[in-house]
Image (tube, rainbow, N blue to C red):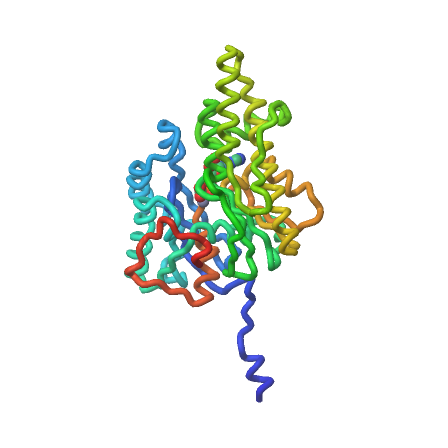
Length: 356
Ligand code: KG4
Ligand code: ZN
């Protein structure tokens, strides 16, 4: 009898939580919706980027961002459902980025999700954007060879426009924050230096491109190690680039933009790489996960892929920057863990991963 009962108990595969979730993301300058199954399989992934809109301001203009989200959100959700060939009634839940992010932008996605949840009777799940970035590493690319599944405990580095976080992920949904930036986020430093060098917006890809033909050793920019802590600081590096530019301009020299970009990128990547490895060493993890917009950087990817000691998980480029597949993916795990949010749920613009 007991043997039969045991056999009848469904076995849950924690790496494939059984759920089909619609994810919605509007925390910054991308309006996105996606459907993900079992935390891994992307059934659709629609993204409307506002990059061109904000390029004229050289950065994100919050009021413009929220207005554009309002215009894009309905067509993007519609597209995600159509691309997945699904109706709301085929889904198990609606996950939406609750924070961190721009308040006026978050509210647009949250209200859309609430409306859909109320109309369909599906549960609503508010997802932390940084947790979403982490879960992008579990998503599979259609038609590609199956990826290695990240193994716990793992050391995670989230590097985006708003965040630089070192996290020890002990198991699914369990995090210990080891450190983060004390000033600028890594992506913010790329964006600010690109503006300084007049390379355009967004700065990360612009710096990367300029650095391709530059000499990373042309300028010896400072690396902030902050001794034994797992915190980061990028403002000194940014100021060092500014001082060098001012000095060269004073000498009426033509700015060696490619060398400046390459030397800045080398310094930023060096600190991110070394500190992550040191944390992995100290906490004895065998796996490292990198996510967030800056993880699209080829120099950073190359450094991590070039070492043999750790098993490294980096999302494909289209999942590094903001998307809704990562929110739907995290939503599958949260749904499976029993999370259900009320319709009173509000945006959480400063929600830290340490509060999860
Ligand atoms: O994750 P994300 O799309 O948005 C936030 O959550 O902030 O990250 C955007 C950031 C921007 O600062 C952008 O300049 C940076 O990621 N980024 C890059 C690259 N692609 C995007 N930074 C360095 N190299 C890149 N290739
Ligand atoms: Zn992000």
